[in-house]
Length: 157
Picture 1 (cartoon, rainbow, N blue to C red):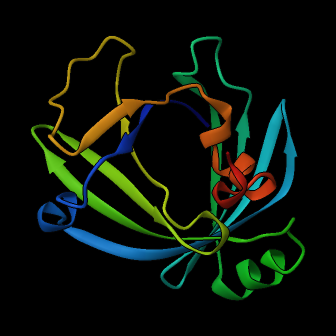
Picture 2 (cartoon, rainbow, N blue to C red):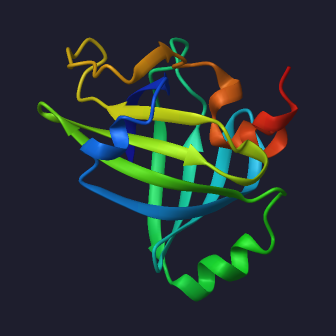
């Protein structure tokens, strides 16, 4: 069990793809999307994960997270029970300085949305901002994956 500190940004170009050290497909769904907690099922490559996340801090920078690895078969069975739509995306990992940016390019009903996240050790930690990084959306709930499953990007005005 940990407290996760992360910041989220919109991505303004696909230049990050040339800098990516790896990429992989992720499918994920939510068994529960209550404002106090979310329960997520994720299938990344052939490994499944069950994750519980708590409510975000007031500034949106941190929240409780607990995660357990599960089998691919278990993840596929649980994904079938999840709220619809299931989120599908390609995650790219880009090393910038001493940090790793995780960039999610969404598909399906969230096609066109690209979000970068960086995990930090401290809320005030300094990090290098690459040229493809756009507006910060940390703490803006509509960019949470749990909300994208309820109100997909294609329906935004």
